[in-house]
Image (cartoon, rainbow, N blue to C red; front, side, top):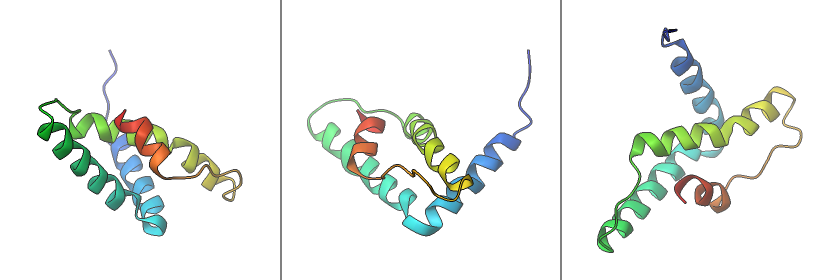
Length: 88
């Protein structure tokens, strides 16, 4: 059984901050999460946890990180379609 030394999380956090510096994705993500959570609660439905949503966001951002490593070529768009995939 392997153990994580926690460095993966630090690297991911730094990468997210790098992406966020240019486009404010974390601010948009947080606002969208709150909006959808409140709407689900008002309908009497459950909603995914913030931890699950963040995991999905990190997974969705991998293509952006790869594109940025290659000069930003073929960078996928960020917007409602990404949030739809994350929040369902």
